Image 1 (spheres, one colour):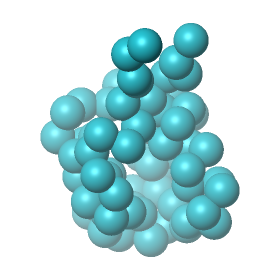
Image 2 (image 1 turned 180 degrees about the vertical axis):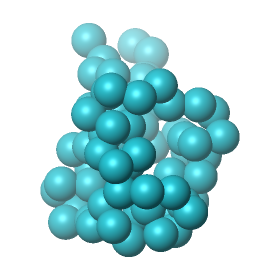
Image 3 (image 1 turned 30 degrees about the vertical axis):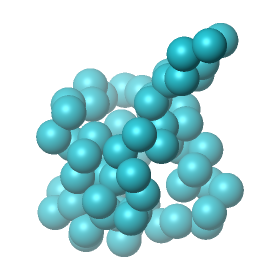
Length: 68
């Protein structure tokens, strides 16, 4: 079973030692907003998702569930 998108995003941030502060700066939002997104406590919009992917330089398909 696929994990939620926010969990995949959080795992990527942790594994790659990315700073929430830098991500927030790149997304033009607050660190608190990034924290809420990565912990599943804030709804992730499509625009925010695409902005997040651009901020960390990954393809938008990176965190989407795969079908088997």
